Amino acid sequence: MAVLAKCRTCGHKISIEAAICPSCGQKDPKPRIHGPAGYILIGFVLLVIFGMLFGK
Image (cartoon, rainbow, N blue to C red; front, side):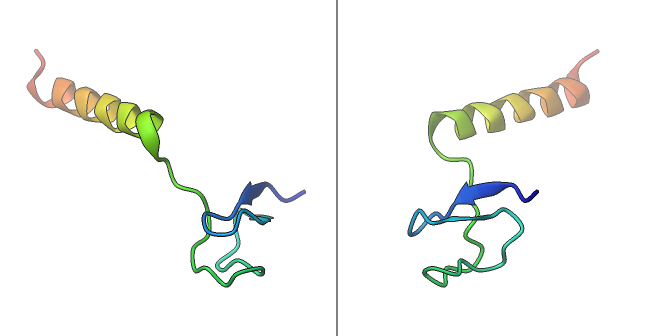
């Protein structure tokens, strides 16, 4: 069973493996991490990397 997500442009439900949206033609239509959750995730990853590099 395919996992579905909404197209970033038109909101049409598409497979997360789709290269283009069949409804609007948007290339790489899969949703990306935006907003506060995306920035928190990026910040956490950076903290882990810095901790590994500079930690004792």
